Image 1 (tube, rainbow, N blue to C red):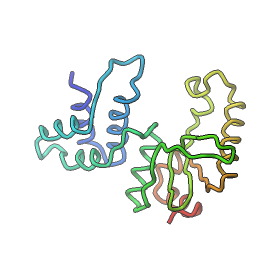
Image 2 (tube, rainbow, N blue to C red):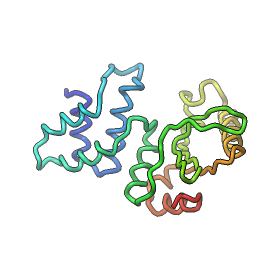
Image 3 (cartoon, one colour):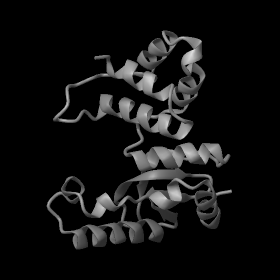
Length: 186
């Protein structure tokens, strides 16, 4: 068995950029958001860099290094990591992630992606948001959908642009680029 940092570096050294970012983002996220059913494994960017230095050059050190430099433990879910990695691949202006933005009501919402220069919010929506008990937190899928609609209405009423996408869009450079362009992200 290896440490979480070593495992993340080993895996990232063998994957393409997008998949490696998913792994490293998730490892970093565990430090600030431990899972109750897994052992606590604090990990920092410096832990990853230390483990990276132990990789032989021929074993994908550069691939892992690129993913580690880009990784962000604030990414909440794999769909967000995939989206961000593909935004980088296509040269999109990089958004801030998991940012507090005020709606017209004054209520503060945490949004997946925020481009202040375009006043635009981006949200990755996987199906589990409306089907998984962890996300529903006692609500019905219908109530979760209505809550999400009210949240979006409040944010739009504050003058913010909004765009949403799913897995099919997140994994496709062409679809994601077209979707973001249509939302005004240049």
